[in-house]
Structures are given as C-alpha cells and as structure tokens.
Image 1 (cartoon, rainbow, N blue to C red):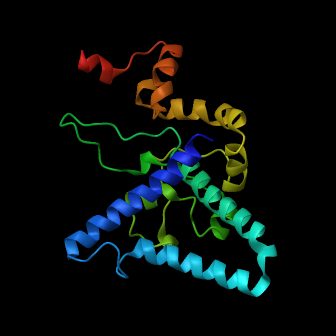
Image 2: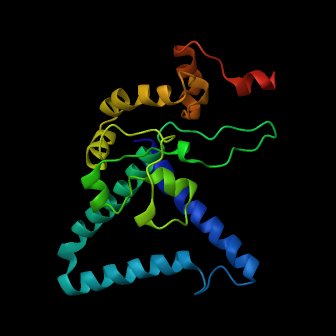
Image 3: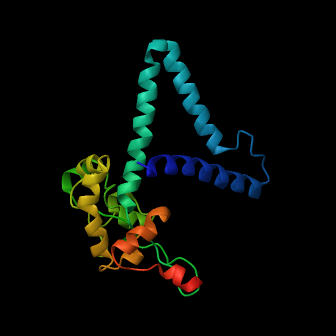
Length: 205
C-alpha cells in the first residue's frame, strides 16, 4: 500500500515534467491549450460537471469512489506487472536496455482475450509499438502464477501477495537477492535477512 500514493504522486509529477519539457522544445507555453496534461484534466472536470449537472450532488460520492477505484486498479496492475524486477546497471553505469525479462507475463487464455493481451506485458515492454493483436508470449519472461483477476486480488492483501510472489522473484534472479528491486528503506534489512550485502554500498567504500 506504500506503493500506491508514491506512484500516483510520482506519475503526476513525471507527466507534468515530461509535458513541460516537450512544450519547451516546441517553444510553446506550458500554461496553454497545447498542454496535453491540462487538456486531460479539463476533460475530467467537464465530464464531472456534466454528470453533477444532470444527476445532482447525490452522485458526487459515487464519482469519488469510482475515481479512487479507477486509479488504484490502474496502479495495482502497474505494481503486479513489475513487482521486484530491476534493470541492472552496466559497466558504464547505465541501466541495461529494457527487455521481456523486466516485466511479469501471464498466459491465461480467457483473461488475455478479455483484456486484449494486456497480460503479455513483457513483449509490450520490449516492443512498445507492437500492436496488441500480435503481442507474443516470451520464454525469457517471468510468469505470474494466475490471471490478472486473481493477482489483483492478492495484491490488495500484501501478506498473501508476498507469500505467493517473493520466492518467484528470487527464483527469477537465481537466488541472488541483490538483483531484486527492493524498497530503499527496507533494502538493508532484507539483504541482511538473506545474508547478503549491498554491492552498491561495497563499491562506494
């Protein structure tokens, strides 16, 4: 649950920063109709205003609940698709290129049909311009043990999620806990639990 506020706030900041950089390259003002972030927010405001105008204030709680559920569902999918996975740094200090090994895949037929191959996220990760109809199952990709409905439910219950997923993350990295993406403030404690030390800290000494 610590991931949810962090990713929501971080995504908003990142979107604004990227859009501002794009507009600056084009020589256009940030506070203008050219700003896609502002346009998206404006569309939401107009939609909510229309719904409130048609149905009255009684619909307001439902709009709030829908909004919270909507962004939490989006971010829980983001969470389960990338849980524990980390791009390693190369000898030059740069992160390795994104590959199918950097996101979780799921080959469950019914859910893939209804979600337009969303679960073949690994191929999308490595080839973002590939059409959803042609997304492939990748052998090098780590595999989720169930479809998205089950995994989303587990993600909302952290103890169950960790019991199901933590050992799979470790198996993906051949037991090397130092290669796992761990929350920074818990990293030292978790590494100590597995009898490992932080390579980055060792290099800095």
